[in-house]
Image (cartoon, rainbow, N blue to C red; front, side, top):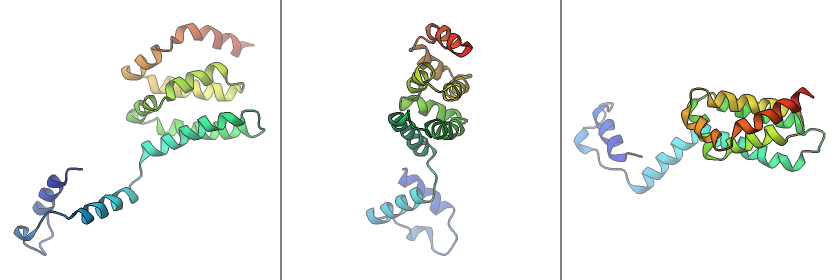
Length: 153
């Protein structure tokens, strides 16, 4: 956080109750309090997306349970909502989501889950050279034939 910049902005746009010359730097405790307050009152979409992704990965251990497909689709819908933001689509790459999505497209036994993963992957990669390069690392054209043939069966 740019504390000197925050101080400068605050002294420029103060409410007039004190003179700007009487303003001093925040103490360590005041900085910690302000940082904690800002974290509590803001929504961190990246953290929420990462938690959702980790839940999806953990869910794989119960792939044979009766509610797996519905739970996975619910979590994939949440993940899809997060990735509407172009920056979040890039963040998905950072915590390994692209490789996981490709793995699900190829290996998940549930057709609806595979389709949702493919949709997320397709939408994340539209006009995103960073993500397109990440996807190319997995040689997607080799996999396309396999996926299409399985879906036609």
